[in-house]
Length: 435
Image (cartoon, rainbow, N blue to C red; front, side, top):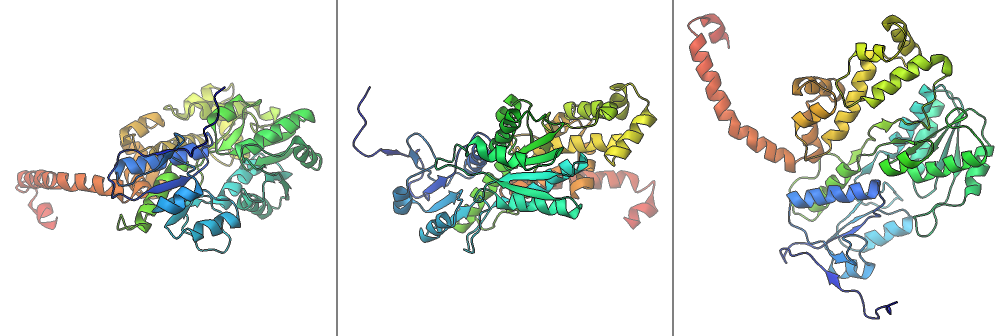
């Protein structure tokens, strides 16, 4: 065993312009949310190489407070308490918060729509016909998620209780199983239970196993962050709500660049709505009497990235198209075609947040026949094409680059139109003059 070093750790920085601002990152690199936020920040820095980020203990995040106070020109921080927020404000440098925590202190934020996260999960449980809902939430972690969950349930005449869990000091572990067990014992079954993060939801699943509660028949469980590894290895696999954390990180970096005077415009978006709900076995709760509907919905989910049509879904069940359409309308309020379209769009929206994919690749990977079909779907759901939607995400940096390319192509396109007009004017003089 080697003896611990007594001297302070050395700070190593990547080679960069020494006049560039020093930016620090206080972000927890948890496998799902935090890592994707860091990837988004890294993507912005790659496109806009004008920062120096200190590397401490081989990590570009979690720099010591002393280093931040001494060297940092800007900071992106994930904070949880009023004390954290006051510390950030006292630093005297531009700071962008990304946790959504607010305590009557003005601090520029780029964050998730926390209440909409809760509402989205509540709607999922309500669509399953559940009348007893509960949310396991930590007071400092995400109270707004619990608030949105309860508000959506109340809007539909359903009660929802909020049950407490506590994060321990290292923030990597949650409170013991007793809080989960005590909370579940208070519920009336069948029930829908929302864990405000995947880690909380996994605690709920463990408590259900100890109490011998059947998931999802007696307790349907959903989490948030959609950490693929965690959600797939649980038993049963965990339903979870995806968050656009990469997009949030990219725009948080853009916002800090703006606050430091390095770019003339702030990001176009600062509050982000949650993404797709990945439905897995933990809430795949459909009555056995509707097993044909369950089979159809499962087929659509499993082939959301493939070109799928109504006859394909019908062929996955032993019932007629008319009977299956009636089941869809009765239990989901949507047609088979609409359900397929929504599954494709959920995948497309997630892929659109990856700046390394082209529009053609997004269309091919989300089940659309071509770019035109993808653009028509985006116009119906978002009021703009897929390309414009991406510009809103990564604007103005990416938008300016794409606009420059479009402007360069415009003279060629205009010349082509003039040549075409010249060829057709003799044949259609009236239409040519009207144009």
